[in-house]
Image 1 (spheres, helix red, strand yellow):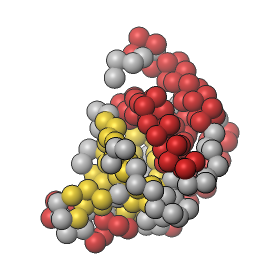
Image 2 (cartoon, helix red, strand yellow):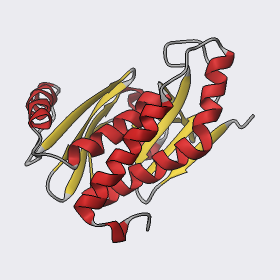
Image 3 (cartoon, helix red, strand yellow):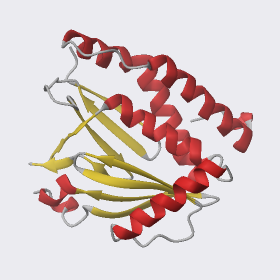
Image 4 (cartoon, helix red, strand yellow):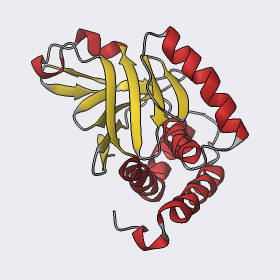
Length: 210
């Protein structure tokens, strides 16, 4: 069995370790955007994962893109008002974002935000507060910014690769430990829905150039 697998986009990097540790979130992963660790940490010059629900992690990434691609939807606007209030209570100084989507993890929290052209992710990574890697010290809380189109392309790319190559690996391990199946039919359908929204927004000629 593979020890871990990596998923790479232009900006986004995700590493998932396949060791099963009995807990509500039995796997661990690292989530990095442009050398900023949003989830997980660095210790002894090595990346270490944070406990995570892998299925829910990818569902959250796709949900962020789903909201970014239809900011005018009343449900998205309602969620944004609620999440913006929470973000400000957490000490984040948001700017001109039109979509704000909150994701809570065991070891931190982040807010996926978008303007017309940019994606901004405000984050507080509690695990990273204790890093002994000099390049990441003091970087446990902040914001990372990148072009909106490229963020969505990265999410689609790594999600497709996960669904095609690795979802079955994670699912088989979970089932071996007596867990119930996750609904990957739904996640595949949701992926295709986000993909269609991307093509409507940016044009099908851009599709899968990434």
